[in-house]
Image 1 (cartoon, rainbow, N blue to C red):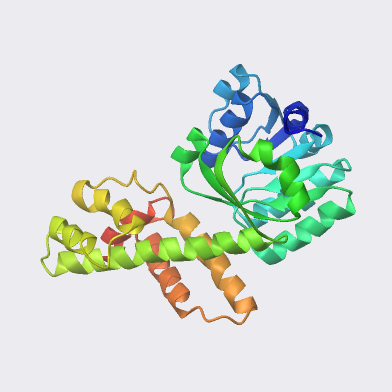
Image 2: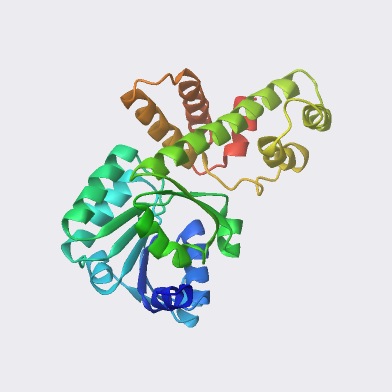
Length: 299
């Protein structure tokens, strides 16, 4: 089969999406834009889907109905409990999943649960990829996400034209679960660095160091990097738009990382400390406040 024939075959496949949130909406809009047949699950937690429906997408009210009619089912939900509910629940996707259907899990989840869900999908004759994302809702809307993929290389190759609709970089990390493991490693390093800088910035303010001086000195030395660039607008203007990631989500991800590290008997003292900082932030402001607001919570 030629590359053109493979791409045409991919375009003809029916795609279902569960989770039209900030990230999922961007994924959905790019899938439709590239000519795929998309059906989304109606849910109170969705972003508005009127624009998707006008562009040609359709919607259904329950997961079982969605799974029964698609060739590819994409999940973009909050975490492990939601993935398991969607897939393994009494009225979940596995009750109607057709043999040959590919389940693509873009959520952030615990690798041990991922293996369980993948096994259940395989038992139904389906195929499974864990493809968690990095980057933000802005890149999702632009079709420029990074995907970290766990699963069979041939399954990935068959889905690559679809994934390229909303991803700029697709990295095959390893077997099922490896994508989710790499996502937790990534988020620990990313969020951990942001938390460290927030704590330092809070201390700087207590010590009378001006925010612009704090940023300037770190940018010229060992504190420079993506995390500082994301924190910079918060310190200088008060804006959190550079990192729209809530403390509740960050705490969830750090919890998953700590669970993974504990299960593998890996050292995770720093991760536990970051989790404690996030807990302090949630207790101070609530889980809906952004991670960058840790500066104020710790000050």
